[in-house]
Image 1: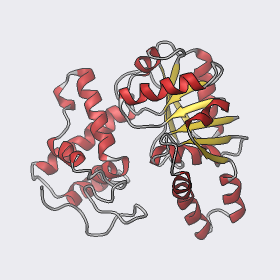
Image 2 (image 1 turned 180 degrees about the horizontal axis):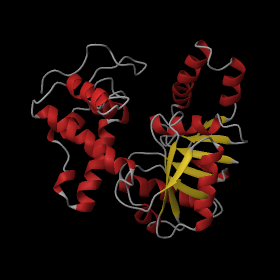
Image 3 (image 1 turned 90 degrees about the horizontal axis):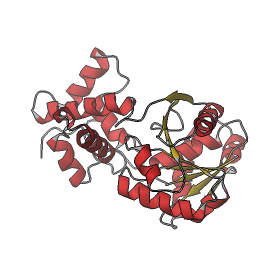
Length: 294
């Protein structure tokens, strides 16, 4: 089976790796929406795999096997694939625009799925000539086991079965979710991160104090502010906006500091600065936690 991953950011590249490293016979086409920078995108995908080779977790032969399954191309490369997984910016207008391009390029036999983390599958489908389905991976996609499978109102049973089968064959655990803002994980997780930002903004504890409290007090593997940096504070903000506008419940209003940090492009690991600072490989720099509110 040939799967196109449309979008070559952190999530898109992670999804491509997750599919290519499956034992089943999958090929992956990474469609770079801008149509340029293919070598740079490939190098970014290779980086974590090369670290695994250095650490002895995979062999050079395994590295070559994974990379040989992945091709980088423009969006037109999606037309020859069996399935398209969109993984672009978390914005409804942008996703609809991208899917409309794909709708014109791809035969009707190609199944469309979206890696949206909060948006309405039904609303996206309504703008197209075919139904789509939600296939929500989690960061880092090559490692995290969960895939939320979200049918829209026009999604067919065959599409649900196909997506669940793909998820299982690439080593993931699919969980079917009725469409609703934020689905399951982000409906619970992102408001917690937003509340942690609010607690810091009120001056109740330091960044490291909040994260340490949740790691030791709730047995979380990482604190909510470090997790926000990992997810991307722009993504957290976009999800909070969806939750707030879809429900009109003030408990989902984005924290003021979150909005300010997104405006400043202090987005976390992807920009090298968020609630912590990060080196060029995305590793947290010790002692770099934000200690004042700018």
